[in-house]
Amino acid sequence: MLIFEQSKAGRRAQAQAPAQHPEIDAIPEGFRRRNAAVMPEVSELQVVRHYTRLSQKNFSIDTNFYPLGSCTMKYNPRACNTLALLPGFTGRHPHSPAAHGQGLMSCLHELQEMLAEVTGMSAVTLSPMAGAQGEFAGVAMIRAYHDARGDTERTEILVPDAAHGTNPATAVMCGYKVREIATGPDGDVDMAALREAVGPQTAGIMLTNPSTVGVFDRRIQEMAQVVHDAGGLLYYDGANLNAILDKVRPGAMGFDVIHMNLHKTFSTPHGGGGPGAGAVGVSERLKPFMPLPVVGCENGRYRWLDEDDFPQSIGRLSAFGGNIGVLLRAYVYARMLGKEGMSRVANYATLNANYLMTRLRAAGFQVAYPDRRASHEFIVSLKRESKEIGANVMDFAKRLLDYGYHAPTTYFPLLVPEALLIEPTETETKEELDGFVDAMCKIRDEAKADLDFVKGAPYKLPVRRLDDVRAAKELNLKWEPAEAS
Amino acid sequence: MSTIPEDLKYTESHEWVRLEDDGTVTVGITDFAQESLGDLVFVDAPEAGGSFDKGDACAVVESVKAASDVYAPISGEVVAANDRLADEPELINTDPYGEGWLMRMQPGSASELDELLDADAYQQVVAESD
Image 1 (cartoon, rainbow over the protein chains, first blue to last red):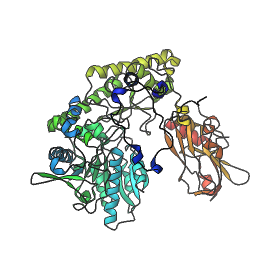
Image 2 (image 1 turned 120 degrees about the horizontal axis):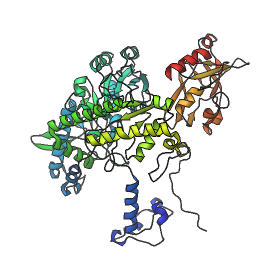
Image 3 (image 1 turned 90 degrees about the horizontal axis):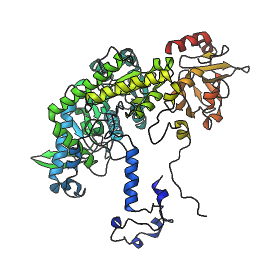
């Protein structure tokens, strides 16, 4: 039941009501709405119960193992939240002068420095408001770089098919044509295809390493050489940074620009449409084009660097300094870990992925790249189960929910048939991983014994299997009150 | 087991081509392609009047699992497009070789038709990717 449907005219949550009503006469006639907004009229207790119930219906990292590949659903330590909510941070007005915000600005400056250090980039800007904006900023800087050199004939961005799914969209958004590069049978980019595709029209290449097939591309430096020789730049999608923290740096691999999904690797809240943060790191040659503002430090005093400092900047992506509350969580997380902690994150993210892969393989499941060591994630292909038993990836995914496991990423990446992309992250125990393997084996047994039973899953959730075709075709996103009779 | 009619020509990227009596060709995606994609929810069909080179992305088919490009099997001009797909993308699932056709093209060159795969050769392609 929607909260709107619980509404009774005149019901109020008195404790939450504003003490004073603003004077609407001050708003010019033309700007006032003609009809009153439809708001649910409910009591405070109704609100509490409604949202508590909703949260209980949800699968979340706080309640369940969530091995959603490519999304890095790891535990965000509570301390990050607690410290980011200190009143000195939350009470600060964005217009208050830098002299009154030196503490906050020192945190942001340190975060810039730490992220630059761990990625091997020359500088980092924190202002993009989400990963997607970070990507946009990155490609916009590539364009600005070429334009500034009068090199305006570059129309293409190369994107390997094992790159992150958002990359082609970003390239198109920035006005480029996308050319896809195939992945070789070993999971690395097909170098022959890359050599054939690069040319004077190449503005750059976008990829992530480790890639979405869960392996580290061993020829990355050769790729960087090929693209740089053709005058293109390298864009690193930070989607899969978790497994390489303190192990290898994108800057050292030859990348010119990187965006970081702080919610994946640095413990800021995931999704929900809430505020994000997409910090962007740049090599020396892209530094002049960074989006603003950036926090600078001169003689121990912090200040916002602006267009006077970076006249070639691509501009501003946020009204102020980015989503500060989110950035602070990343700052606390990075400080709590330190260099050694980051190394440990990478060790355990990789160990857990390889342990889970090895166990699933021993249990008879097919791994997409059996000769390769997994990085942070790996792919199981259920092609055989689908063919021989009739249970496909979606059936396994739905039945896993009954066993209390969020499904791994399904049918992605597209280049592996019946793909389950599994990313356990570093924050899970061995017992949890073992439980997941047991569940996968049980589901396979269930499907052999009674396929229809597995096809009908899930059974234990608030809703059964949804009609996703109808959901996609008949969008129903807006509640409207029943016609008054 | 997907259907592969004997009288059609095919591409390795799972399009089918039928030579019509008036010299035009009808293009669609194969039964194997629709089966692999699953239930289609959206088709971005080409518009009549447009023209493509062989191998150009000419349409997008989107299912609940994935969005895929459809590639022009030959070069030529689009003389008609299947407008029904906008409202009924499921036609490709229910009748891929009939009512689920995608577009009709006026071939730019006859030789390109000869380069297409016959049913046996396409059967091989399907067997290998299966």
